[in-house]
Image (cartoon, rainbow, N blue to C red; front, side, top):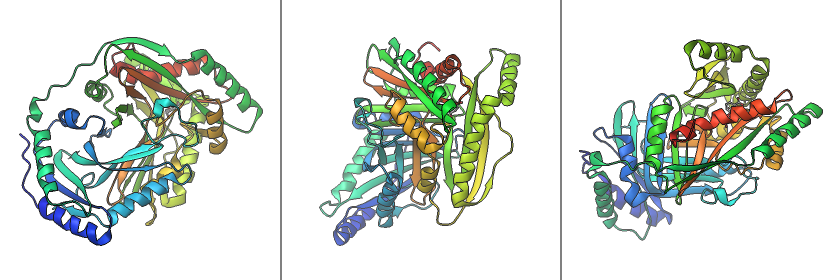
Length: 467
Ligand SMILES: C=C(O[C@@H]1C=C(C(=O)O)C=C[C@H]1O)C(=O)O
C-alpha cells in the first residue's frame, strides 16, 4: 500500500498562484514525500491508463538512481540547431529560479527534475520516423517516483498560473490516489508476437562502409561511425512494460531508459555514460572497441584478451580517450584517466572501456559538458565536424535520438546523461532498432556488419526476436 501523506501541497499551490499573478508567469510548485517501497515497473504500468505517451523510465547501471516519471507538468523543447543545449538550460534555469519547493530533505533525483534528451544531429533532415520527438525534448513529470539508494520518494510537480485556483489541489490528490490505488496488483501486459524482422538495405550500408574506408584512406579523416536500422513487425501493438522488464533482467549493468512522446517510445539499454555530474564531480566514459562474448569462460577470456591487444580497436578507443580528455579539460581543473583500457562485459558484447573522473570548475554546468562531449568519436568520428558532416551526407538513416544524450537534470544542476545506443523506437506494432560501429581505414566491411548484428542483440532479445 502506497500511502500519500497530507502535506503542505495545498498551501504551496496557493502561494504559487499568488506568485504567478505577481510575476505574470507560471510558477512551478514541487512537493517531495517519502513513500513505502513500490515496484518501479508497477508505477510505470499504473500510469498506462491515464498517462500513456507521457511516461519515462530510467535506471542507472549501479541502481543508485531509478526514476519513473508519469504525466507531463511541463515540456521543454528547442528547435534551435546551434546553441540548443544552452537554450534548454536557460529555460530550465528560468523555471527553477522562481519555483516553490516543499521538501524536508533534498535527496538527489527528487523534486523538480527534467527528463529527456537530444537528437544526434539537429542539422540532419528529419523523417517521419522521428516525427513525435523534437530535436531537444524534456519533460518535467507531474508525478515522479525516485528510488535513491533503496529509499522511495514521490514528487508531485504542478505548474500554477494566474488563472488557477486551489481546486488544483483536489484534482492532483484525486489523480495521484487513483494512480497509486491497487498499484501492487498491477498486471504487466504481455509482449505480442514478433512476426517479421527486416534489415533496412544492408547492402547499401556495406557499400557506404566501403566508401567511407576509401574516404579515410584518401583524406584527413580518421574515423567515422556508420549506423543502420532493423525494422520489426509485431502481430499487435507493442506494450512498453514487458520490454523494460526484459531489459532490466538481461542488461543489468546498463542504463535502462524508456521515453514516451506522443504515442511512440524510445527505449534501450546503454552501457555508455556520456556524463554524470554530482556537485563538482564529473564522470564520463570512453567506450569503443568491441568483440563478441564467448560461449565458454575460456573462449570469452580469449576474445577479451584479443580485444585488449588489437591495434585497430585500441586506436579507435584512443580517439575517444583523447577527445574526452580534451573536452573535460576545458571545464575541469582536474581530469583523471587510466593509461590503459579495461574490458566492460555485457550479456551480448564486450568493449574496451576507460572511465574518466574530473573536478569541474565552479561555473561549469552539466549541459555545458554535454555540449562539449556530444558526439564523442565513439558515435561520431574524428575530426568531429567532418565526421558529422559525412554521417549527415552518407548515412541512409535518420538517427533521431539514437546515439545521442538521454538523461536527467535536477534543480541543483546535478544529473546524468547516457549515450542512447542499444536502442529502438517502438511505434504501434512496429519497431526500429539501431546499431552502428566505428569505421577506420583498415576496417573490413563484413566484420563491421557482423559487429552491428551483435549490437542489435540487446534490443532484439528484449523484444524476443532471434538473438
Ligand atoms: C555505435 C554503437 O556503439 C558504439 C561503438 C563502439 C565500437 O565501434 O566499438 C562501441 C561502443 C559504442 O560506443 C552502437 O552500439 O550502435
